[in-house]
Length: 364
Image (cartoon, rainbow, N blue to C red; front, top):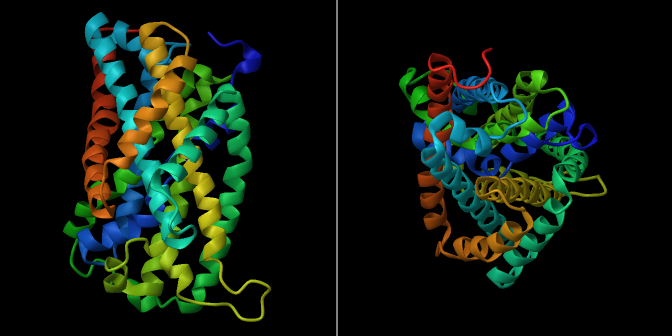
């Protein structure tokens, strides 16, 4: 169990959850929603998806609070039995490795397309893996302090960039509201939920909080920040490029900022600043995923984390190099996204009900 001085504050918990959610999804969400819905009502799906994730996050918090001071990897054996709990923990830790590799591959694709051309794939990905290792070696407290610096910078740069894109914004591109009815909105919710995965960190963060009773508040605020930013991104991207224009773009959020210039300012193009800050953001997402994976294996096998940190590095590199192109990358991410929805959105309420019925953990 962590000592009080090594535990994280409520605000640090908020920052970690927000940073994890704010990965690569915001760069592609407008295209994914526009392609699946064929309407401009994706902003409604984003709100509904965010609310569902908040409810799932609260279920995770309530379940974790029944086992004070323990992470999912520790109380899963008490909740599900020794063997089932251990297998479940290993599956969760393995799942984090795959998602971490996906985030790095997205980072590589965006970097080589807009910033660093003709750089070997392995060189860029391996460099970020080493940086990620350096971050997580300091423990959860060091991770939280770094994230407290990166998140405000991300929000300021992103909001400022979106405000500047108002130069080409046309409200007609967002009309009519519900022109095709409610069914496209419902269809878009599933795609939206995938982007908000990251709330499941509360399975491990709750045990590390100074005030675990405030975990519910932390997860709500932690989800609200990326919910707001994704909502702004969708509205501005669709308003600036239209539904048909967004569908034909791989990275519409970046392409929006490349589609206009602001004359008279010291800088006329702002896509570079967004890319730089978002590479940092993807790095934070990757590092906390690798940390949770290493923590999961270490607590499952009751050993130290450091060997798993190093062992996961070549595995992540290998997985990140598997997709041959962007299409395969998105196809694989969709599969693992659906798995994540089942594990972290559908399963937590069921586990909470099970724990209450069979009186697993502390009675709350």
